[in-house]
Length: 336
Image (tube, rainbow, N blue to C red):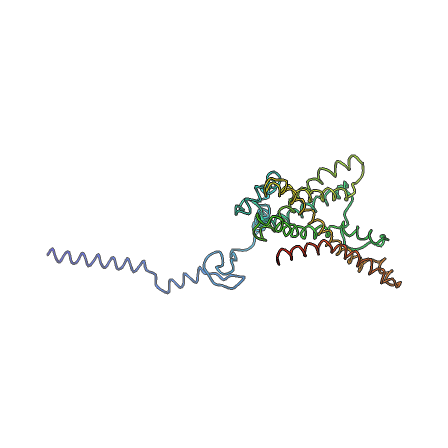
């Protein structure tokens, strides 16, 4: 009797367990229905998946676009652009050697990348320049590469072109690359790879642009108030040139050994980079004016082509000399 009862109890328990297990296990049809319900199609690449982000292209799949999404995206983008700016700005001003050493050693999380820092510096420099012009504190830079017919001298037209905003924008990027290349050769023991030298060159030129923008904010209003008129932009450009020449030398002194040798080599590299960028910019400006100047066009039409080509060609050769010397030294070090 007791055995029969135990058998029935075990049978009932087994039946209830099987019933419970069968209720927990989903049928293939239910699983397919759930998958079909949860899966979404990526609007960018067409991949069908379950979740919020596409595993192929990373596209976020959500609901309809809202005003909050637009404002939030704008805030996130601005935060990412400015991320690390205070640490980079203060660090390169107060302790440039330590910042460069930390960045090259791999401790980069708190700092901006060199390229982003250069873009921010250029935007800030041009923004400060334009703001001072709008306030009437500084005479405007030439905002166009078009040559005015009021210029009657070739060098006057070249000077007008080199004071344009686009010229400043282009040359600062080229100068950063040249400085990195020169520092790679000068400080070869500390900078083992070209990428490290490029990062240093970009950082230093970017921060020199930041310091130039700061000097504008301090200098131009003071001089304008003293003179009672708008300031000639060549004054602040001269100050910026001085900063771009001195600051890399000081940073090299702090970053590559606090010795007179490091200071001298840093100043030599920044000076030569400025000479080369002046040569490259001069060549571009000479030939741009040659092909676009209304006055030179009249000269060419009057039959003086040989004289015009001789002048521009001679100036081009002069500007090429420092570049050829640099190329010769680089070839010597690589082939010896």
